[in-house]
Image (cartoon, rainbow, N blue to C red; front, side):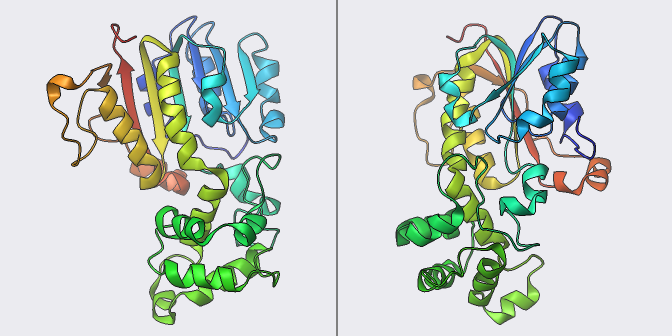
Length: 310
């Protein structure tokens, strides 16, 4: 594990995956490698394949590659492309969604407005376009979807109007000027009473849009379920409702349950391919939150693939 990196809900994840000797596991979000290392150490001859689209993950994985040369492999791939992975028949698969501490704490990646940097926000700087270019070229509808739906910003109209009005001025190119622009669009009364920085929600929405984070989750979950062996376990850690919603709906669908209040499909037409291991999401203990404040909003859900599932 990288010094200073704290994998979220580690013991709970291990409890659900219950690594077995000779088992094969897939960590779809390597990050700092804390979950991967714990799985490798949990039983004899455990094999872990990890994925991460961040090119810097390779250097963080070197220690595990050297310590477990025949049992650990890191694949440079976005989990949104999981369906193209050749390997299958995993005993367990884990997702740990959201932004990693390494990305957030590196000012040059442009995820945070705490320090001034180019507004990039890409989890994989080799793919797509930086946030600065996306903000200059996205349609109004795309901006509204990002700020209103992904950022859940109630003043989305004012923010989108400000972004479009700033195009061509250079104000969208750096995190500090972008944060100032968004903050100025928020009414002064709300800025004064907010417990978070006024630009926080908009930055989240822009980041999610630039990286297609929700689309990646929606594509990856069914691909992961297909790659489980019978009785294999699928775990997913989310950090906000936008990530948790597709997980909850997919898990309920696999368990033969209504996905939401609008799902009126008769029960006799549903197919049950999994059993729920978590009726409610598992959340961090007070001790874990005190030790790692960034774990505060984490929610863990898990299902087990039924032996009869194809």
